[in-house]
Figure 1 (tube, helix red, strand yellow):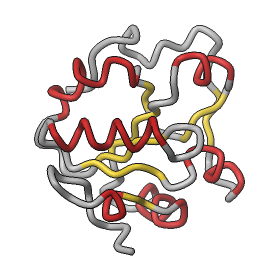
Figure 2: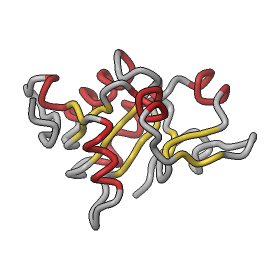
Figure 3: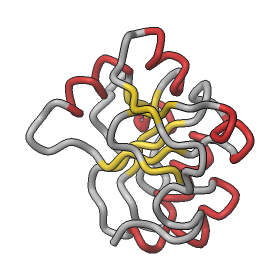
Amino acid sequence: MNTNTALSAGASLDSSIVSVDQLMRELSSACPPALIDVRKRPAFEADTHQIVGAVWLDPEQVSGWASALTGQQNVVVYCIKGAEVGVNCARALAEAGVAARYLEGGIEAYKRAGGMLAKRGAAYDGGYGGHGAPN
């Protein structure tokens, strides 16, 4: 499986997976991916940690914020287990013209592998008031 290939319209989902090991290498590189936490709001709010460098964006609003990322060539999204939410967000981003991958196993696999996490404040809103995305 090629973990370096981003999902593009019509691409296989297998080609859009990034392994935890690969993500850890990329995060320590000179050009790390844009990292988006797409756990559903209740799951995000129940956890006081997220992957270092990630911003949370509401997966229920992906159609609203995807266009702000159009043209991005290195985006990784993650959810809890790397299943439905992450896959669907990666697919929606690809349809909007974003080269997106999703984290295999989600944040749970990343935690088990000892990945670096950041503790967030209780009132964290993703830095975007739960709306919008980085420019």
